[in-house]
Length: 93
Image (cartoon, rainbow, N blue to C red):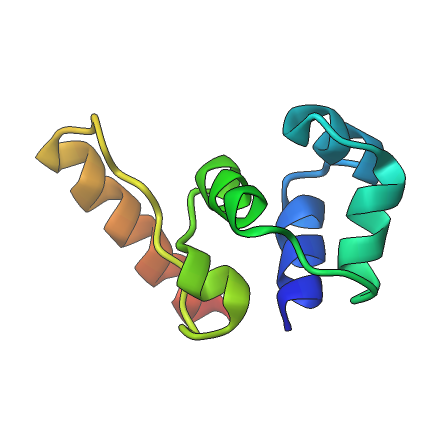
């Protein structure tokens, strides 16, 4: 599950494995290994991934079935706008 979520989050941002590897300061082979389920990110790497993708570590690990968007620094009007957009996207699927 973690492998699938990392890959899906990366692809949703339009990043290659090499781009994610640069952002994580590691090799593309390391990212590929995670996405293939051959290895698991270390706890510090999970935290870095969660921050990079603005999701919780629980989401990455499959403990939660929903992802959360980090709204730190946004005002209430912006948060409301994001919530409306999420509702609209859910309705269209």
